[in-house]
Image (tube, rainbow, N blue to C red; front, top):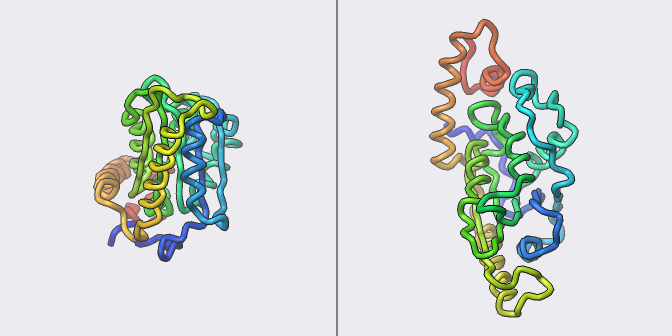
Length: 248
């Protein structure tokens, strides 16, 4: 049985209920326009929760408290816990951010660093295995793929099975109020296609192949580490509590 079958799927025919948006910038520029164009294609009945850089935790200090004592003990828990709770509660995750130096902004990376405790190799949550994530990026002419990969890698290691992405490289019109009608129409068209793709997806009842292979690999690791532990670590206890491995 694939691990995601333990999760009760809520969408039915993919009627999205809750959307969690992580914004990489507070500036209402091209990326903001793309995100808003994407969101407007979903019902007004959907509950949308948005986070901005001011909500995102400071840089991880590397204290390892989350791994050893629990994420609620993190010195930045007052910011990390609300965001993670919103992620867990959402049906659709949206990451919207501009490309900085060919990569994701520091605010996005800071959040991803704090989320590592929920990777498959540590303490993954089965509720996230069947979620869909969308990545929306914008750059000044540069490729978007490397910046999107930052988020894709982290989400894949959390166990997210379906990740859609869309990027735009704007060589000329980098300010919304100076944008030509042609470029605005191009961005709107991209978001129409992206929203249509997401809305046409069928509900996921299983983990997709990539995260499932990662899960099997990490489960073997946990079994091996457990043999050398006098008492199960928090990570191994998490795996035991979910029935993924057996205690000695």
